[in-house]
Length: 281
Image (cartoon, rainbow, N blue to C red; front, top):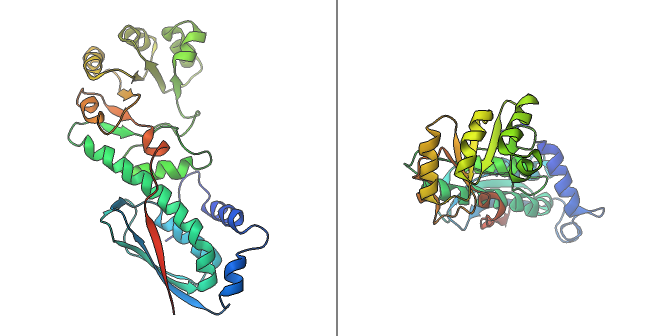
């Protein structure tokens, strides 16, 4: 299977990551200690209960160094699996496996950590009708991968970048002279989707009258959110954002908002505990 992701060059990512690790001398330890003809079998398994993300990306590191490596996928991205689950089996050149190991594990641990935390938030709001969104709070250079991982955890991607929608925030409003004027300027620029962050109820009607297509209700407690949803009456999608945690997200989602966005799922997700066990062939 070839992993493809819109806007992401897997081959370039693998090359750059391996080059960062190997430098200009390569894996001096494996080259010195492991015979060139040696072969390994390996099992990649999880020591945590996780939601999997990044299996094919991890496999790409081994394939880059040993095109003939045999890879058997035992689960699929997006699967939620218990502790002790084997994720993939490998057989190939020992040196190549050892050189690729850390890059492969770093990637799948990070992405599965994001997917696992995301799934926790998604499960917490099940049945409310609200959808979890990610944010742009991602590691530079890894946004496409991290947002892929949130999808594997059950979230929906918000903006991929600054280019795919206008998001008018308090600083934009301050410079423009008002929320309605900021929205009018974005509309005059021909931007089809205009998201407006509001932190006061009295900003809602001016934003809608000027042409906002989406409202982001920032740092509002549940009673205020419920009143805002009633006022908006389904005219545009409504997003709740700001300081959302696993402890607070359910009450926020139950106010009737369309979306809840959470930066923590990419910004603060711990790495999943995934390892690779080798045996000589």
